[in-house]
Length: 233
Length: 105
Image (cartoon, rainbow over all chains, first blue to last red; front, side, top):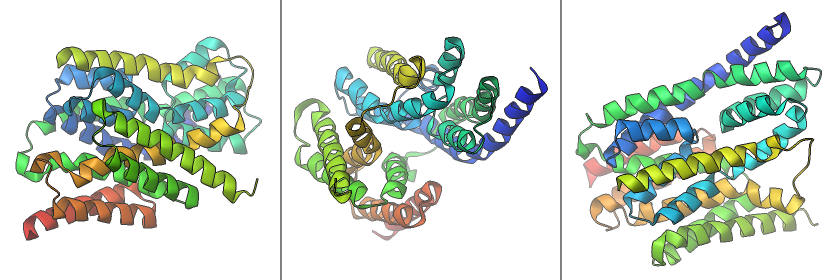
């Protein structure tokens, strides 16, 4: 590691550090929700290590608990993660020149938080070399990815200790709401959210949880349409 | 149920990794078409509300009977999150409203 890559790694570490405050409670909550749904520690840890994408993990736990067929669970949870493709496309502009092996490593660590840290840094410092960008990204992921594992485990332990009258069944819906509410910035987002809720309630009787998937697809189309109209073409 | 859980973990793990690798894995810097970006940008505000709405209106814990405490908590979380843009604050406010509501009703 040269001096420059080491300093890039450290500066990534510093920028990633505040995300501990977001990831830790989230990880605990995931552990609690999974353990209340009857998941073993092994299962929740395997999921946090292999998937590393909180919202989709919550989605999968919830849908499995609702006895939704496996294929629909997988499709819906993957749909939640499609936003990662946008991050991937946006980072490819900065990291496309790195060796494939390094890009394959970075892909594993690509999350909302690491993306946010990296993209803001790369934009203001375009003169960073490829290996500095790699080091920065790995540094920024260190306070995020391992923290996600650790706090999932902690939540799993805590979940067994929390009595039922604390109504933690409702921690999950509240968390989902808290995640999308800040995104309701303009008409397209509000239109999408309202469509999603309305369709999802209307289509709740469709078999195999497919109503949620249909509602989400319809809402994406409405959001995109409203956005396009707003731009006046 | 165990088999389902493990199948979902593996499929979701592999699928999510491939989504992450999608554009990073390609050589060069290809951009996504405009309409695709437009749709993808709206994934979070489409999927999450669709998941949440039935959970709020027909909570499993009350056997699917609408519950004023949970409904109020959901509105509080939504309002606080939309106004402050602070997710952790919205969770705290929502849970506080839930406990207050459960105690009141």
